[in-house]
Amino acid sequence: MSKFYLIRHAQAEDGWTSLDPGLSKTGKKQSKDLSKKINRIITGKESFISSPLKRCLETANISLAGNDFNIEIDKTFAELPSPISDLNKRVVWLKRVLPLTWKELENDPVSVSSCISYSSWREDVIRSLLKLKGDSIIFSHYVVINSIIGWALNSNKVVNFNPANCSITELEINKGKISILSLGDENLSKVNI
Image (cartoon, rainbow, N blue to C red):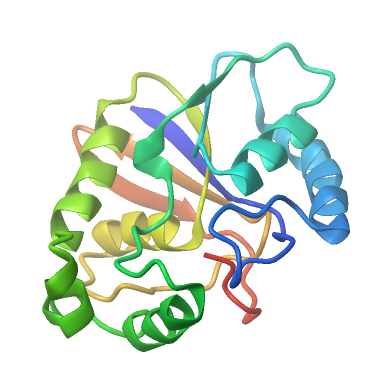
């Protein structure tokens, strides 16, 4: 049996018009505040994993400052791949597909033309989570967290809840089954994918 803490990155500087934004001033403060919460849950036995994207790495580095932890970078926990390079069109696509089911996302015309298999992407996230040994703290993204929560709930929806920036969702994995112990704080803010 293992525990996993999924931490959504702090507020990004410019989530809609940049492919890899760093943190805003607010995001840096959120990350510093997060360190107090993390220090209450760590036992020293956890592994620390982060998406390679700046907003996650900065959240991890700021919130773990002062501790001597190695942060493993794992691209599996990076955000949902975008089929569109034009950032303005990407925003339109995201707003259209986030309310869908995974099957509807797969069948979306833009998704189909990109040849990205979103069901394979989701399965890779779950497979990587299940392969981890021992307790872990993972700094990741909105849709990654939602894909894991949806899997645990046996839900086909892309979005199952709205994790706030720096929210901590606690899961348990026992005999290959993912169980939700507690969902992180929610808000309805703009999603900085």
